[in-house]
Length: 91
Length: 267
Image (tube, rainbow over all chains, first blue to last red; front, top):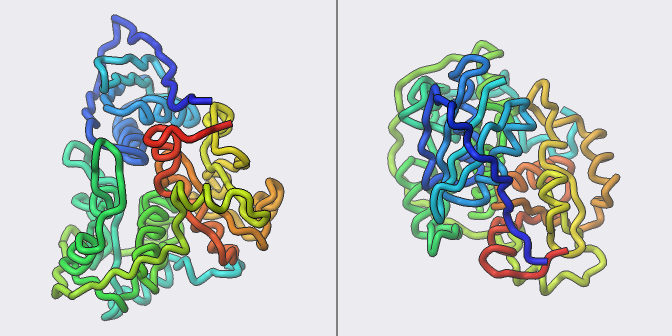
């Protein structure tokens, strides 16, 4: 078995307008999740947060953790070889 | 607190009474970011020093993290006025993984007196504790790290000890991550099982003990905890120490090291 991190790819809906964009490149676990969560706390319910991370681990685990917290994962999209765009809707 | 090793934690009321202790060094490890109105710069416990464990205790090489050399730890702690005999109290937003991460790192680098503020910043505010925007200045020290290999597991160590009957591998990731591939022989108990999500404090001793024993992690075992990159597992490491597990190790490299960097077998 060689599975590692398998982000669940969800194309970002075209009509999405983020209320807050957060570049977290260079950040690793647990900061990618903790900072995403703190950013979401600033927003109102139903507002949109977009985060860019540069590792598969975060692209896998941050959406899972957000789902666990009750938020909606609108997108998990690979931007290039390293970077991922994650889109969340606050519950 | 009824934990066998309850001196690992302090409560907010205790801290209020000891805030001016000369030997106390408070470490604020909450996430801080200039783009967010949160963290240290927005207000902290008087006397607290800011520290980012993921940046200060690690070095990056080939996009992988490894523990920083002792010289860097000496510089990091010494410049902040932390001495080998300082009484350190760490706090996070709550009893979170940043606090336990810093706790494990300091224990690994040989610091004797390290405690965690139970419930963190949230508990401090709830207790009506003071806050300030001022950063303290402490005289620099000559800190001497003394790494303690007994609280750390590496891939080589796990492989060398894998057949021991008293070794217990505990995967602290979510069930989904665990079922997607884990170190052969590992059992699963997600790290947040140790938290009371209402109060964001550790669950009581009896509940914690029952949870660990239900997966087979009994007191007689040497328990190695891991997750994706060693932070969530540090939370279970602290819970184990709280319960008196005297042989507990954190595999700080975790799956990033085991699977991604080394391509070692999984099941």
